[in-house]
Image 1 (spheres, rainbow, N blue to C red):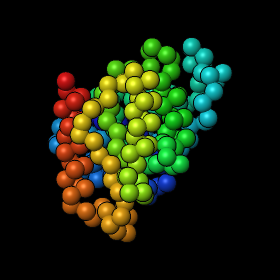
Image 2 (cartoon, rainbow, N blue to C red):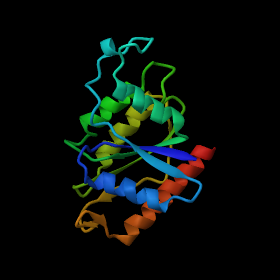
Image 3 (cartoon, one colour):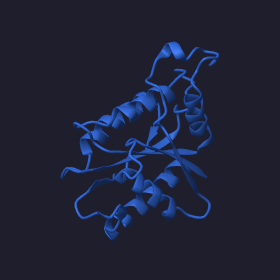
Length: 180
């Protein structure tokens, strides 16, 4: 099984990216995980994306292909102004086309958030789930994972064993969800 991860934060050492990299280590030997980079995607513009994809940007075609080749999608999102970042929304807008034939349609997905507030990004996840349903994705209902950043990381590394255990349970659940 192959999982493609989309990290909403563009920072190279974002907490959400650290958690995705940690998730790679927690997967079983028959599961691989790669990260789809979204920082080079242009702002969504349907005029750049004709039906024949003749002028569709290469970065968009790459993202769509990575999603099509994956058995499941893992999304890690921070919370900016009580919502997912624009970079993540932009990636989903590009990947959700062409409508009814998109790479996202009927693809199993799980999303988690690591946020600085005491809610651990829950508001971001609520909005993100609405977007994922709109993309016709198969959203994993549980377990949920929201990570409060206080005392979870030290020097850019995950140090909280409870969060590591929760992350292990979360990605294992995604594998089971995708197998269904």
